[in-house]
Amino acid sequence: MTVKAAATAVTALLVLGWGGACSTPAGGHGGVAGSGGSSGTGAAGSGAAAGGTGSAGSIGMAGGAGAAGNAVDAGADRGGVPNPGTCSTAPIPAAGATVIDVRAPATLAAALATAKAGDRIVLHAGSYANETISNRKFGTPVFVEAAAGDTVVMAGARFTSCDHLSFSGIQFSATVMLDGSANFTFHGVTLDGGASEEAALQIHGQGGAGASHDVLVEDSTIRGGGRTIFVLGKFAPSDAWNHHLSFMRDDITCGSHNCFQISGGRDMVIDGNRINGTTTAGVLTAGATRVAITRNRMKGMPGKSPCATQIASPGMEWDNYAGVENMTSTAIVIANNIIDGWGSAVQLDAARDVAVVHNTVADGTGVRFNHRTPHDQMGNVILNGNSDIRIWNDILPSITLATGEMKPAFESNNVIWKGGGGGPGDVTSMPIFAGAAADYALAPGSPGIDTALINAETPLVDFDNRPRGAMPDVGARELAAPAGACP
Image (cartoon, rainbow, N blue to C red):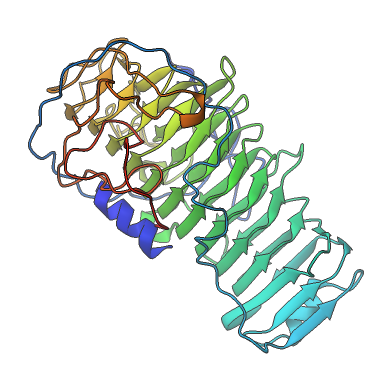
């Protein structure tokens, strides 16, 4: 996936133990979920990765280095969100839609049994039981919402072979699982996995119902559990994976394993979210293709949060299951993110075709290359280290290469002040940040201003979705750019 393709997708859809700082993906030390399995055990599934290599384009020269400055902790913010909710792409009920009122202990399943496409199911104040709901399919959305001003708590739910449901305003206090379900929207909800090892949200595609797809989660709070958001697909070529999944402007706090684990997911957008690190990884891919991780504010806990993103291919060393050779991570875009408080911003553990562009990393290691050679069950090498990694227009403390790793396929026009750089146009002076209120925006006179490279993959907007112009800055935020709009 090129970076421009990732931007189009956003618009359309609205070190490990071996020398690294991150946790081991599911399987190696966590077990594997079987068909229909629990989110608390590990990854399973398979999927061949696709995605073409983007062109590097011509190399521009960086401007002169400014005086060194100190990185300033930005404090709280809302990621790349102009105003939470104002950019919603969730469906809305038609005027005059039929309303089905539900009061506990009545069930959502009973209401859905009588609902028709376009109806509104309004849950009134109270606590609702965990439900398993199957084979409720509609041609257009049925809206399930909390009554205005009411607190509605639902103790989790599992939806199997369901289609076209849209949720808003509901607090889920245990796992919500989508099992072979499609066209789901969650807007302004809370998904809370608590202290459980289960996920807060599991998007499941290993069972007989097939892959889940076309899911939007926006303007919501997601926290707790083991793998807070767990995308779990078959160990098969990527056509069989869960797909077209979007997470937009959410506030996500990592559970006991990670914030995201994608093990069998393709065509995904993780954009404009606040990702709050704890003691685990932020976004882990272990079988993913065409995934855009863009415009997120990823804030870790210094000394505790290992890596903000970990792009990995497991092999039998982590997930010793038939089809593991399909679980590669390829065609990943990491762009326009602001990252601090993590051991590493990007950790690569046998990945292919990864674009790292226009990110601002304030501390830790910018990009860490670990050298791994995952094998299939027959002992054949799946990937020999990392390949086709492209790094440009980033503010990074450093790039580190493990023994056996090749330099990036393309590296240019970065600000890298603690070592490891060396691409054309790289600047080795420390950036000057504008101060806490600016959240790592560059100050006037800083290295990196007006020195970014524009090529076929370079994003044309910044962290705040503002246009960059003809002489863009390095890093996630463009200095003095005009106001942004919704993606």
